[in-house]
Length: 277
Image (cartoon, rainbow, N blue to C red; front, side):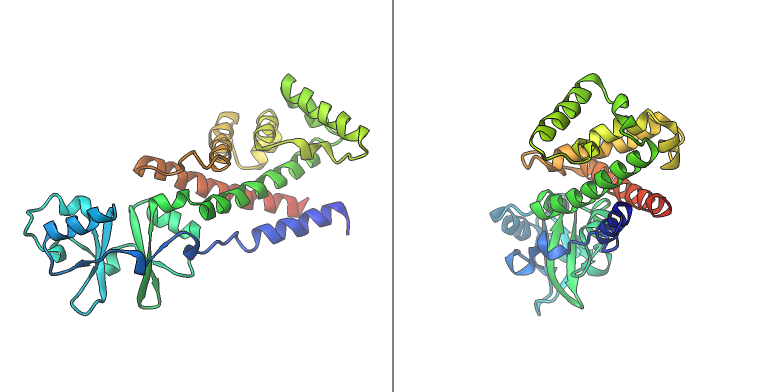
């Protein structure tokens, strides 16, 4: 198989499954949750939630069936004797996810809701909260998409700037790093295509200086390309450092949701370009 054919095969393997990591990898199983009785008063539900530091509680009827979701913040706004049933969000309106859904779907739902129940058929089996997107499985989902993008952009840059012409578009320090790495590995008889030494931030800098490439990717200006794809560079830095929180509030959730949407879209755009090449 030719090198270009090998790249196409690898790209297909990465993209065709849509990098699908299912919700059980990040959700909290229902059995680990404290539930609130629909007939209980707000004061009782808040006290139960406080014991395990939950921000929300599944609501169950007298037969133990989940009928909705209630947020502790809402319970604190009503009189202590208010019924939980009057404060809850009904199950059909709670933005519920299915057990077979992936993290991408969770990101879409959590963009507008702090949490969502997860169902398996008609049964509620868990709950996903925005904070769950900080877990390793969610970081792996984003890392796989970013790795795919990095690989495909490297291939695109090699095609549009052949014979390593892209090196001159790097800054001085980056050139020293790449050329030094090339020389070091050559002496060890361990050489590879020097484009492999670049990371996403290097590739973004190169493309930003080449109107033909960023236009081909669908951007009408350098600034727009740098703004949107630069956010993916920031995402890459964040997911590689577990001490950095991806989602802490509604604002950071909105940022993550927009970056995830851009990440999937630009991957598919580059894939289409490479398949035509």
